[in-house]
Image 1 (spheres, rainbow, N blue to C red):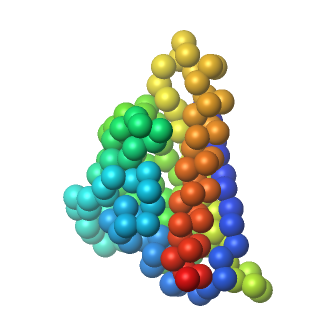
Image 2 (image 1 turned 90 degrees about the vertical axis):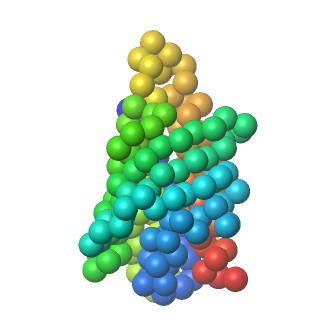
Length: 144
């Protein structure tokens, strides 16, 4: 199962960064690959959200449960249904002297074992690019 971890340093307050990451319904406003993010359910320290993305002309759709840990500046997510067999991971904000290090981890499985060896390296590269784009988009929102 491919695992991708991307990091960036953002000059800003950890709580403000956390609030932007937590507001996933706003992502399509500043993340070009996302068509829509709809919050289906909101509870104490969690949401269930439905995502539609367009990656290189291919529509990818999924629903995920996001769990919020505001004291730790951490968010975990796991696909509950969708186009991939598995997709889960986390956002972690670590305060630093010059801002905050923001880490986005993605663990995914395409779900077709016969072609996994061929597709996983391509998908891993695409997931890394997408993760870096998400981090850069959040960084631009904070540092503008």
